[in-house]
Length: 156
Length: 156
DNA sequence: TCGATATTGATACCAAGTATCAGTAAGTGA
DNA sequence: TCACTTACTGATACTTGGTATCAATATCGA
Image (cartoon, each protein chain N blue to C red):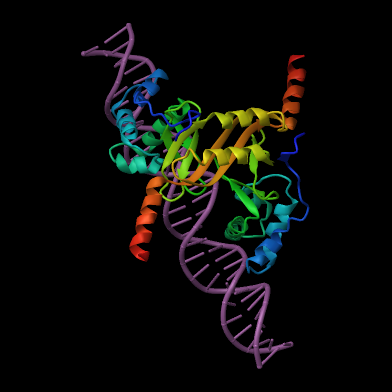
């Protein structure tokens, strides 16, 4: 994480409740429970995980609140190859994701070169480009550490 | 489509039946029906679409055959933001996809700059990069033509 | 406080995909 | 060609992820 073009800066000012109010939605106890829980999570999550974490809030309400937050641009929905999509708080406006293929941890990053490539592709793609999505699959540092520890225990 | 770095070359030699046999799977009438149908499609497709097209083949068999083909690397599975994943024949070994957000048409492309960006990101991402995925959302040329025709009829 | 209305959550439902398993087809050796 | 083993099939039931419905309830401005 050395280049100035790469940013994973986290803003502490994310307030999902405000994002809902800004869209004219009421601040209810159920919605507050959902947004508080999401803000308390450090990683990406699935809708079902949130339902399990909040047994006092109905499934329909959890799904509805997530949808509102995605519509508001406060959450990003990340389609996963197998299984339910994951959601993460959109802390950086336009960004891409790293997904650890071992533990599923999702990170955000932004790299100016990716945007430059998109501009250069614009001349070469048949049709009008209206957006793009990029995911980088990694083995994250903590998994690498675990793997190394595991190997040293087993093998020597 | 002018640059030599961008390739959408289609090889006519794709044979999904062989891909299955190479994995030690039997060449059965049901599997042949599925692979023939897929080879006859010009565009990406969903599993359910294939089930509808092949009423004589069981749903389970269609899903199983698709899974085998994906495992064999002969099909690529494309997670879509909402709805069922789409599948397309993997004609180019490593490639990315363009997805028309109006008609859903999926194209393949390969661009050397994308790979260069990946190599430059390797130094800057926390963890080991093991792969990546990129989709470009477009309005394809035929949709643009349709839209233009529709506008000229309605507005002028 | 009142009343209009947005919201909730239990429930039923739908779509996509998988597990099960008895019956069948395919390959193989005699 | 036959018999036999084993892979494969497909009907079915099930699971998972998510949405629609709707009566009851909470919210918030007047």
